Image 1: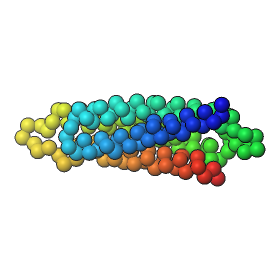
Image 2: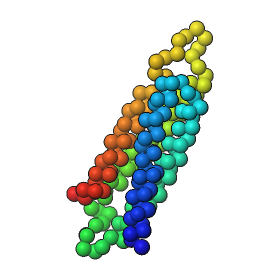
Image 3: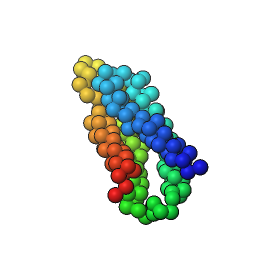
Image 4: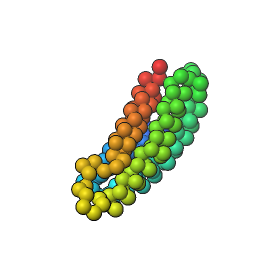
Length: 151
C-alpha cells in the first residue's frame, strides 16, 4: 500500500503541481498578446491546479506515515518541515497573488485601453504575475530538491 501512495504522490506532483507552476508563465505570453479569454482560462486553471495540489500533500503525508521505521522519517524532520513551509508559501502566493493578478489582467484586456490611448506594452498586473509565478516556481523547485535530497 505504501508504494501505491508514493506513486500517487509523485504522479500528483508531476501532473498537478507541474501545471500549477507553469500555467501562469504561459499566461504571461497571452497577456502580452492581449488575449483576454486565454488569460481568463489560465487564471481558472491555475486556481484549480493550486487547489488540487492539496491532494499531493495528503498523499505525501500518507507516504510519510507509511515509511519504514529504519528510514527514521517523521513530520519533525527538517526536510519535511521545510517542504511544508515552502509549499504553503507557494500555494498562498499562487492563490492570493498570481490568480488575482491573472484575473485583473484578463479584465483589463477585456476593457481595452481608454479611448485615444495606445495599448500598453505590458498590461497592468504583468509584473505581479511574473514575480509571483517566479517565486512559486522557485519554492516548488526547493520542495522537489528537499524531497529527493532529504538532508
